[in-house]
Image 1 (cartoon, rainbow, N blue to C red):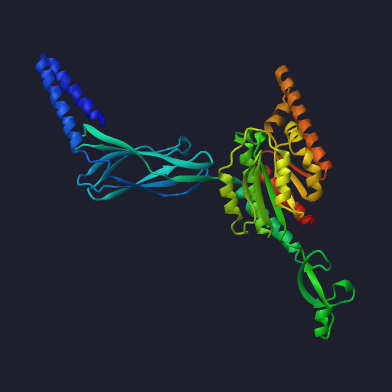
Image 2 (tube, one colour; image 1 turned 45 degrees about the vertical axis):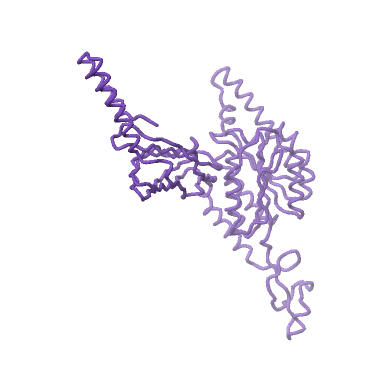
Length: 429
């Protein structure tokens, strides 16, 4: 049961009127009439127990965009339902507030709730609260009911804006590679007539025997390369750089790289790991890889513990048995890497082509340049020390044959894509 503001206003007016008459009997009579009206309003209000509630609407929403959750209210009773409906969601979903709904007897009404989520992940609907008002508007029946529904909030893929530029570079590389080459280690393309200067090892004797001329095989660079993207979801990925967790930048960079690699004809796999494997997308088709990666990334959150470098290495070795490009998105934190991934780097570098990408904090560069007062000088010294440690880690990785991409959040996705395209251009994939 709930009492409305109208009932409180009527009670106030009645009390003031009775008080003006200075009659206790008049006051009791006014109160009795008000209570009777409230009771009558409750009796005449439509029953909530009979209502049927069901959901539909969006099941996925990109972070930063809006979606809609639809609630259908059916009223099988004989009385019209005059109500206020509140569809509750988690605060980060930022759902619109309560709405007034009138459902005719035997009819149904659709209530649309706008969702504007501010965080990734699976967002479950809360309880639906219905307040059924009586015809006098003095009192209402109220009840809450659980109507299950879940919306998955996906990464926003902000780096999509770089895709046309990178694909143009990829098409240029593809045009350069259209010239066919002879020799082994590439993908067979076609047969053509032998000319002086051709390698005799490329002669197809079986095909030549069927025809009057000597034929040689032509080859083209292989397209079906494999890229394994490893997301370090350990403690360092929770650090906020330029207002966003490092993990969010990792996701954005991984999506851009996957989109370009998919257009290049390469296979892309994803592993997210810290002290356990959090997500795995292995063997997805080129048409499905982006959708599956985005879906797997949606629920990822940083784990506030150090990542297990041994687990990362063993998971990689089990997932990729042949040489391929492995892109590890992690932080160049000397302490975390010493305890985690660095001991496994020599083994991985001998097996794969390694590329490590990290988010650089532009604030450190700003502090290193400050010299205004004594406090700024101390901060600059600390920033320079941090930069030196980071550069030392990058140098150790480079000496082990590992490529390093270290860039601020707004530039990391494009820088990682450029590194991939450079490897592609140099024929190192």
